[in-house]
Length: 259
Ligand SMILES: [Zn+2]
Image (cartoon, rainbow, N blue to C red; front, side, top):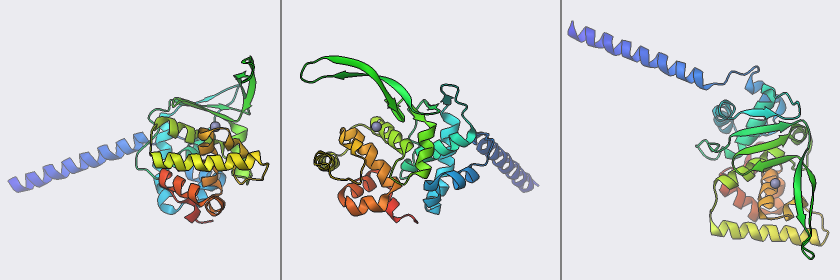
C-alpha cells in the first residue's frame, strides 16, 4: 500500500512538472499574427539557405528577440509582425555560431519607412572650419542601445544581388560594440584587408566589396560581414584570408551552405 502511494505521488509530481514546463514554454513564445516559418520561407532568402540544424536554432532565438526587443515605427510607420520576423531573422542569423543570446544590451529597433536624415558635423582638416548639415542613412547603430533601419532598404536585401544587407551591417556594428577588444592577430589581418580595399579604391579599380568599406575599419568590418553572408562564395574566392577571419569570428561557414 505504501509503495502504491509513493508511486502515485511520484506520478502526480511528474504530471505537475510537465504541465508547468509546457505552460512556461508557451509563455516564452510571442503571440504573432502570422506563422514565422511561412514568413521566413517566403521573404528571407538567407533563411532558406541555412542548413536545417541552423534553421532549428534560429527559430527560438528569433522568438526571444521579438519577445524582448520593442520595435518602434517612426514617421507614421506601422510595424507589422511580418516586418518584425524578417528583421529579427536577419539580425539573429549572424549570431547562430554561438549558443548564447547576444542581444542583452539592445533596447530597441526603430523603423523608418525610407532613408532618414541625421545631423552631421564636418570639419575641414586644413582650415578647421566646421560645417553642419544632414546625411541620409539606410541604417544606424547607436552604441549598443538601439538600431535604426529604413524598411525600404531592409526589403532591398531580398531583391539586390550585390551583397547589400542593411540589417547584417548594423547588427555587425552592434556586435562589435558589445564585444570590444578581441584578438590582436585578427585585428591586424582585418586592418591589412581594409588597407587593400583602400588601395584599390584609390586606384579606381573595381572591387567586390562596397567601396564604402574603405571609410574606416569599423565600416569595413560591417561591409565585409554583408558580403560574408550575402555572397560567401565570391568572398571566399576573391578574399580567402578575410573569409577565414570572418568564418572564425562568426563561427559560421556560409560558403558551405546550400546554394
Ligand atoms: Zn556602418
